Image (cartoon, helix red, strand yellow):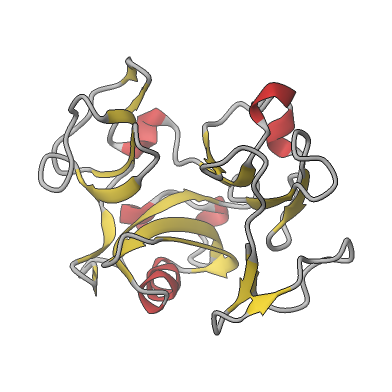
Length: 224
């Protein structure tokens, strides 16, 4: 969870991946490891300088003194800017509720410039998730958790209180916006501004600056 003393500068949170038994990989954070970090498996990698990337473990990324966190899961959906050739093989991308092709899915990737891309949708196939990530510019991307209960993305408004920012949900899903302000059974990613108390801006899909969302919710695609 994110206790009150870990919320200053908080910008966003997003969900983790499958349980370790289904991820085909492992998890590492601050010197503690759960399950083996498997060569060839896709991985989110977090470094001491705050940078983040997605890649194939043992090819693009490896465990060294700069790495503070690793979250592995299955294989890359996008590699070298190309969608995986087995993208329509449903079982490759996890067991879904009722065996459905179109379920809630989430994924994360990086662009050629190193920018982070996150995608989330309520009714997505593996291909439609990969296509969304690719069109957003991802050159490497991996699927995260799926099905109705787990995927979520929250942004945080610190304009009223930098130490206790107000969370709001990106999209419509059952878990509350305050999900990670109380203990969670699943891992997640928290993104912070480099300067404590800083507030990020918001842009629309064209890159133009926009006002922060109102309490009523998001009428148009918006990123903060």
